Amino acid sequence: LIMEHGRGFALFTLLVVTVVLCIDQANALKCELVGCRFCVTRRMQTHCSAFCATCPNESQRKEQSPSTLIGESSSGSKISTPIDRQQVTPSVNRTPISNSESSSAGCGSAPDYSPCLPLDKANTLFRECCEQLNLGTCIRLCHYDVTLNKAKHLFDNGICTVEMIPKYLYCASQGKDNSACCAKKGVFKSGGDRCQKFCNSAGSEDTITPKDISCASQLHQILGCHWSGLK
Image (cartoon, rainbow, N blue to C red; front, side, top):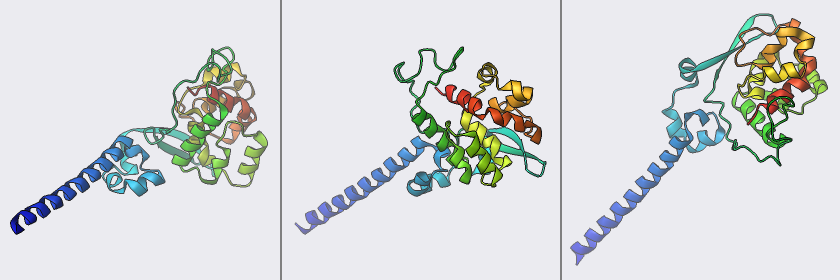
């Protein structure tokens, strides 16, 4: 009887250990499904620290698949901002919305380039990208309905800097070229081809210089085009 009791206890202990191991494996699997690109978020760092420790560090990720955006520092020196596109993958569902939610059936295309996503959903995408790229206090500009006066105030008071512009434009466009929309909206009339880098940040290697300030007057149209480019 004692031996049978001992065997039963041993089997019970083995079962408990097996269950614990299965739970650990299940948690690890969930972390793997989310992926390394989200290890920059606080939630992943808290719940998936062991998994994230096995991921390439940020410098290695940049070496593997960088998309380099070029800007210019306030001192006039050229700056290069590598952006890992996998790192900037918003968690918001991008399932196309119905025509009733968009302003027209031909949203995101000529001739009107009307938005396909509601403003709140578009702003969520914008802000999440800015958070992932660490725009800091300049995150206050990361919404499509920002005013030119507010942007001017934040830059004049040093809350936003020129170094942040490439990342800001990348998040606004989600890496998409919206030059056709900008041309239709007359963005290039004020600053010519110089303003094209504001509409195709991911494809432009031109520096942003003081000569490009005139393009800022078209901020409303530029952000509107980037909004219409979201699907």
